[in-house]
Image: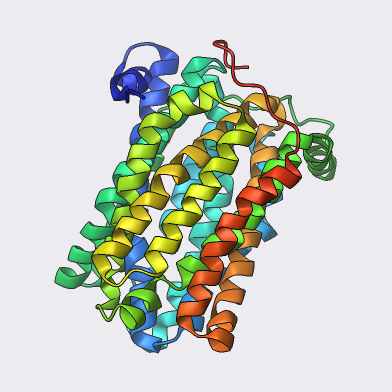
Length: 416
């Protein structure tokens, strides 16, 4: 299969024209904020594990990021369908910047609660950003082939950031300490907010006058409940998210305890994930457009699990990094397939609520995985626990067969 990166970048390379201009702004803002966030991915767990030496404390950072999607995620989705989405994007970035600013003061063990609070605030702000940008993308890119390319291009950007961000975070962390990394993330959110403010087209759904927020929430629940496809994707996302979160919580112990490397070297594992993610994003456009969603998801989950097994049983850091790269490629394709099908199947007026439901499922999986990970280590030991969670990821492919029993037709050229 030929990788046509140029075709994927076409909608993002043109500055002229309202929709293409807005797409370029969205891509640039997302890239900048992701750079800062992926630098922080290395700094936060390393700092917590260095101070406490506890896998439970490391898992707590994941729990604090998962709580807001469960607590305010559904409301955030409804808000994204009621008011100007450009305003939501800007406000969310500014809110995330405020949360990151709190982390600047977490310079001693006694001030570690400020880091936890900052993570919570940042995650709460992201709850509003995610459904808003998901609903804006079909408006600026259309719902035809351009939407597939746009989703793939954003995934490509994510892969590029995953590739360079963690190793860069490792270097910055070693050279300048966590404060410098946090400051960069803060600045990235401010730049993203400025770019979102320049968007021209970011309308909402029907006017909210005469509608109750509770009614909007019920409408979103009914939408997902009535769609067998959305229910199936939601269920498999929950199964995968739980296993993936457990492995994420154990990455630093995997590197520091099992492989005997400095804990900060976890950045190289994440960098390997970025290499695979980059390759997967580059080919995802053709795969998503050609094959049924059910088939794509089943194969992707199976391949991700295989990569994780290589990672957790690796004798060296290099082999473990190769395993994360093998998992990253199908991981990118899986995310593009899920995102695109959600956008195509859901009316834009309720897309914010539908996306929030998926964010809540991701968060629930994050909570479950974060709680199960330290318990599994205590009961079985680190090597066995790592293998169990990798095998659980493989089992997600079976969940696709159970929860999504009917094949979904492949996309036509028009993107339906």
